[in-house]
Length: 332
Ligand code: G3I
Image (cartoon, rainbow, N blue to C red):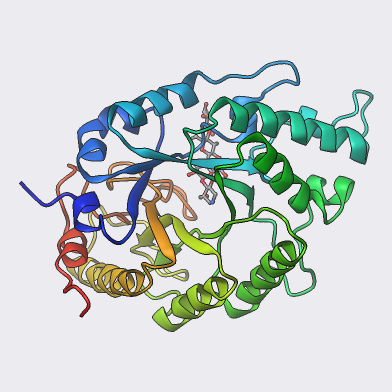
């Protein structure tokens, strides 16, 4: 019997996995054994929960909640306000144009009140706003209908509504490319100004979609240091380590090479060593999946290409990366 991840890391941080209706069945045992936090990969996103103004669809999300409860797992909610996977009706004024600011704020509020309210006391942390910061050097915030219609304060409003709906839930700003220096600073500036303005924000989520060469450990450390200096807690929210570097477009592999697996072990090893160092501020590490038989990276960004980014293989057996992660020495 291999050590359970969540027991190995019990004194440091929670260990989570993203799940979907399929893996909730096919990976049930693995999930229950190793993880003590779950996130819905898609099922709590706006378009899934709220396909029409007067219609909410909670069946899949509720099923996830039941699974978590039965297995005594915590739940991270993902995500309330995002430019992606949001139903079109939200921005539509009913006559072919866009809604006005007040209507959109009212719709955002209704959505957040209903969703956060439904799971009040059961979802301990929410990714309130996802990926609002731009990757481009020209602008601070990413162009989106939320931003265009409401203005910069759509972010603060989302946090206020979420806090009102569940005052005990931890509220996170979640983003990717958090380790790229320019974007790291933009996220820092955003979160700092939210805090200074008294907005109820409690943490920063680092998605951590990383690969064998990127980002460097120093850049990850710099991001953690920078966000932690704001007095917030950090969650690693969507971790995976792709076996392909950005420029690698190969499509011919049916299994990862030995070299890839060795590099992945080293990467996972050094990253978890770093996470342990920061476990006073870093309180959860969630993987974006549980085992290599199901990962969003299959087919992304190269169509038809398989990837092997997680700690367990396609048969749910622990990989070298798993052994590397659990075998680290405790710090003195
Ligand atoms: O469910 C439909 C299915 O009915 C339809 O036939 C099929 C045809 O394309 O699409 C299915 O929906 C797909 C959905 O995943 C479920 O598999 C969508 O096309 C696809 O776009 C969607 O991708 C998700 C992606 O977010 C969308 O942006 C991934 O599963 C999900 O892992 C990914 O997660 C995001 C985080 O939320 C935010 N951070 C980045 C991360 C990775 O992109």
